[in-house]
Image (cartoon, rainbow, N blue to C red; front, side, top):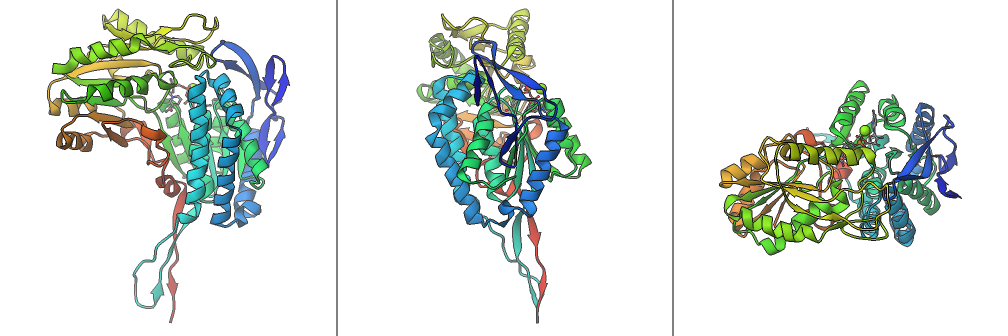
Length: 487
Ligand code: NAI
Ligand code: MG
């Protein structure tokens, strides 16, 4: 990055392992959420840049050095990138924290996870193989897992570094060439990671990255006639546009569109274990996590006990700048702050009470996009706090009466991304876990270990397709069957 004090100027769009200015010549201001002021500018990529990036990727996927690597060689490159990320961890964590506002400890954990994605998929690259199918006499029928070709990746701002690893790690492992459109609100670490990938030896065109606005670069990429697959994480509204664009080109896509994920706490739960995890899952990253556990469903007989424990827990939580390194940072931008505050206003207008609350720390930079973490309860079942994704540090508590009621309530939103069941009755925990409609259901835990190894994705309106784990290798490849007749 060039340092143009005080505003950092990102180098442009990254195509064929080289920086070039965006064709538009325009830049986009990037805000430091902790300070609420512009600290960087990124290139405003548009259709022309996307087209150049897709051409570079097409060449890499079919003719270039990338297309000639063996699976083992691709895996080695991914592993080298994992090591390079770990070697640059502090630099990357500082950049990530500045760009997103998250506390340094969170940014460090995110960089470690980004590295781990490349470590995992580096190891997995040469473990994916086909099968042979018994068929007619005189036939030999092997199947082969082949890459889609050029994969497009449109990622959000909440975990830029992790998302970069999560989405291109498996795509590269199976041999696709990638074009990434990172989010305009936070994309400095993906830009730096693409540069690091070139430094460790990724051939030209394997990783291309075009920053820009969603409605310009994002729309151009998703509609490009020469891409073969789209992976998208973001809002349900844009998810519809992405799937429509994919349909027009008759290509596949994965959509990860967030959730309203429940914790289901039965009266026999170990509350000492549960409460800190539950609080953390909605406060982490200021609640801007697709899998945030933002609904807390509590068996009525322990409702008061749970609320009083949450009250004690939240009282000590503080929002602050990355350097203050407290429990949570600001939200990403003024619009997201307004969104969270609009939920606060609606709750207040509807007499839904605050039962626990943390504070914005004293001494935070003026102008930062801070909101206090809050717990509301009892939230009426049809209230927007109980049904809509806030994407902020806001927990809705709802009492339930019995197991059947708990299951109905857990499944009572449009979403189905994640859930946590808390009970010391193993049979009940398993029974309920199997009835809850969500891509991942934890028992007596939630979001453990970052989940790099664990297939992840939505049911219902949380989207479709699976990322993470070995499953992502299937998502980013397709099956080819050879039918060979012999004597
Ligand atoms: P968004 O869906 O607009 O942004 C996600 C990505 O899509 C960004 O890279 C953006 O540039 C791109 N994009 C936007 N419009 C596009 C278009 N027309 N064509 C192609 N790409 C496009 O999300 P936004 O506006 O940043 O946040 C709004 C809400 O979305 C949040 O409050 C939250 O509820 C949800 N969200 C969910 C995320 C998740 O992890 N599931 C991540 C980010 C936001
Ligand atoms: Mg948007």
